[in-house]
Amino acid sequence: MEQNLLEPKEVFKYFAEINRVPRPSKREEKMIAYLRDFAANRHLPCKVDATGNVLIAKAATPGYENRKTLVLQSHMDMVCEKNRDVAFDFDNDAIRTVVKGDWLCAEGTTLGADDGIGMAMQLALLDADDIPHGPVECVFTRDEETGLTGAFGMEPGFMSGDILINLDSEDEGQLFVSCAGGVRTQAEFVFTPVTVPANYFFFEVKIKGLTGGHSGDDIDKKRANANKLLARFLYQSYRKYDLYLCDIQAGGLHNAIPREAMALCAIPMADKESIRVDWNIFSADIEEEYRVTEPTMEFLLQSESPCANAVERGVAQRLIWALQAVYNGVLSMSQDIELVETSTNLASIRLEGGNRIVINSSQRSSLTSARKHMSDTVQAVFELAGADVTVGEGYPGWKMNPSSEILKIAVETYRALFGCDPEVKGIHAGLECGLFSEKYPGLDMISFGPTLRGVHSPDERLLIPTVAKVWTHLKTVISNIPVKD
Image (cartoon, rainbow, N blue to C red; front, side):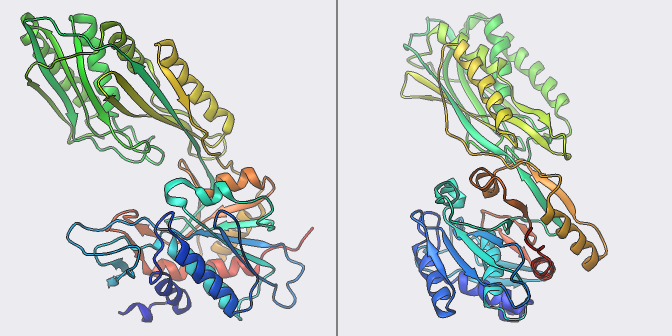
């Protein structure tokens, strides 16, 4: 089946058009121009703020003028990833799509359905003349993927709606009503390099093959954090041996649960066999603790050539004590729905420049006060250990509104259309709704969308039948927006 034959035709028509317009994050100028032209050709009011967010308005259809103003929102940028053997220029080339069974995919690149399919639904509504609706504002934000830049920079009063539907969710049949805010906390230990005494055994310990995952979505799945496991072994070893820490490289992205961690150490040659026994016992203990969630973890200890310098002893001890003590994982659950409310992730530990060790962590919560408490807790541990700590600006969460009017409408219309209830959920990750809730505290919001898989990778794919379900549901919700108070 070709894409131009997919249903609903009006949505897939615009998705195809969108995918002919290059729109990498931070380089959305061509998409902004496309949206301006789209509005001008239909004589629809359009404005662009200083950040580059676009708003296209459409007046109510006759008889619906007294309805509340509805905002439909998506982001215009896409993650640009391709397979190594694919020749593709994201700044100039159109995304090439292919249908595989019930899935729409791209040929060796990201598909751009995150969030191009949300944009397509907005454009289909703006172009339609057979959908009854009140006043509508379609908002397209820029650079959601790499920094929420559009939502952060949105000018006050840019939107004037009472209700907002975010079209950036990835599982049909789920209505999202809250999200976590987040902040990064960085600690830095500065040290004077020292020389390891003679007749010491140098060895590298490495933990790898962990499951990892997203530090928000997967933080409650009882997966191991490689950095915390490494810290655990270093702590028990430092207490037992005259240990020198020569290097540490652990973890990676700030929003990922670490899958690998490595440290280069030295102990007296006389303790060489003892440390191997300790490592084997430690490995067996951890494998037993995580036998369900970490079936592929590996523990490696190998001898290494002597290194020139090590971390001075006092700093190494304070660092290791802090890594052992700092909290990691879920702190609390939401009182409103079955969802993680507050968590922290020890993301990376890096020896850099020969004289400093930098630790990055991230804290998340749907409550700003709880997020601050979590980052304060992490900050206190590292400051007690003598580190310099920097806490980022962060972004706010979106707390569930138990009396949400739009949620009630969305649930009732879904039940009437499909004979079952949708799942009402929160997400322990960031959505633009968090920033909107801070800038527009009275805005009633939900988020939903069709089913996507493999987003942010060349495996990204869109489940075609779910587009029709979401489009039908969206049109029904739009036609049932309540009257103004």
